Length: 107
Image (cartoon, one colour):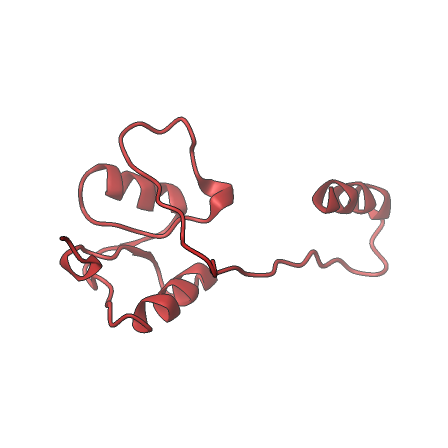
């Protein structure tokens, strides 16, 4: 049976929070990243996987459910997660649109 250690782990460049989260999960299982391959975007990671360069972690919101060239495997429970916040200046003149976006996100 194959193990993850046999595959190149592809991650985003330094400074991306998703990179740090992925490394945290991988280090818990003694899996290291492929140092020679780092991407600037999730779409670049997707294309690298399609080209057979390695494997990666993709946020659910970025999954392309019509994709036929790659396979998305969900995490088993407990699934990793992260909290995202919407932040804006109290004195913003765009409060109406911000409130609308907030309502959409809460739904």
